[in-house]
Image (cartoon, rainbow, N blue to C red; front, side):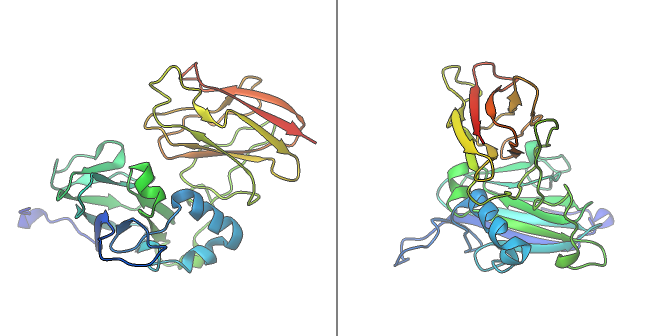
Length: 289
């Protein structure tokens, strides 16, 4: 890329992300099969959620640049991600809650859905202007690649703060967002769980286009108040969905791909829900006292 000397972007940090598969010379067990800058966090977002639920932000920080590729910048910075696929499979780069401005593939234009597609040997550079503090997830948007290791974190500090001063607000991915039987919780990129053994429901891939799909897996969940009565839905599809109770007691709002919704049930009963966008998707939560 040739930059106009009179109009160079003011870059605070230039981060390189090399994405690929583990090479054939690795021996032993436990190595993540998909890596970024030679690092991988097996289990993806769900494993990261579990780590945070158990140990808090300090536990996650203990994995910074050990298993979790981590970059640090400050509010107000404009940063560049130089992303390249050095592997033999198709990968992609997605940063949560940010607008990515392409410098190579489509200069000056926001990347659709903040997902940079990368064929083998392809590369792009994207600019991000940071407006809010928090710990933001980036990953390969191929779900099985992310779950097998390809996730990392961007730590955005207040302009004069440290990691410990990051506010626990909806701006941060590490935020507890739960509803109750009378209020609605918003969907966020990543959230903690109120209990480590809460129920998990997946919005399965291609459910938005396959009218024979139940959509939610499992479609019937049994929980017990005080034991596992927090339910987490994860949108593993490539289109937008909702988790909407038929009786109006909870509603996720629009869940973009990769987002999750958490709701804590406090009243026994049988709660039926559906996707407001895809009428064939239905599920049930049975709550026992």
